[in-house]
Amino acid sequence: MNRYKRYASSMAVAVLLPLTVACGGAAGDSGAVSAQQPVTGIDWRVDGITVGGTTRHAPATARLRVDEDGRAAGNLGCNRFSARATVHGDRITIGDLRTTRMACAPTRMEFERALARALTTGTLVARTDGAKATLTGGDGDRVHLSRHAPT
Image (tube, rainbow, N blue to C red):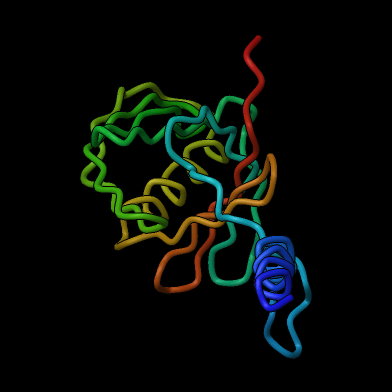
């Protein structure tokens, strides 16, 4: 009988432990457990930026891709860019941008300068939520992204 109890206890632990971990065990937990999705290796469309509490929508051409191998590239809204990037988990630091030098309408150029500043002013913290992502700088400025569907 003692052998049966040990077997039954072991089976209960084997079945209930994964459920407890998956559902969260701490009091006050929301119960939702999800792993942070990577932001690297994905072609992102820049939807907009929030600087100083003001959100500006991005031109349709604005794109960003950061790869694990230390490369970042995309389009600032008018000009294409490339840069070195350092990725440590959810932290991304993008170095000086190398850009093309096309001229566009003043509003696009203003957006481009603001996006370049947001991407290169310190370390960004990446947060993903399905097909959306946000890069937040130390000053609270945010770059809003969504997965870019290839055309």
